[in-house]
Image (cartoon, rainbow, N blue to C red):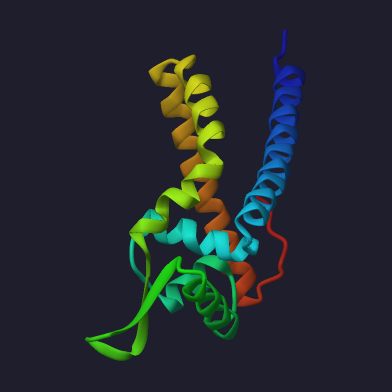
Length: 162
């Protein structure tokens, strides 16, 4: 007996669930940004800085997929709101180093607290092997997103089969 129909159905279910999770994640991000009085790109910038630490304005532009002009405006807004500092790089005065203000981290984490607690309880129900599988899946999906972003940024619109 072939497992192909069951596999195809399971894959379709996984793809549907992934699309719905992505959609809900975006809706959730918009709601958090609105609660904080920020644009979603502002929130993406702040999350990026919270993850990696200080970064150049160029790195922020690449991460948020914004033009350098849009990043300049965004960083000005975030500085005025007290979320970030932006200082000239002493090694290269043309570059600006952006850093999240540590005293504002709690303000950014607060809207996620309940969700984080619920996610932690959900994950507690998984075996170590299941958590490792999910981590590998997310790592591979991130690599795919980054590759596709590079492709889109380069202007490559050719369709390729996987």
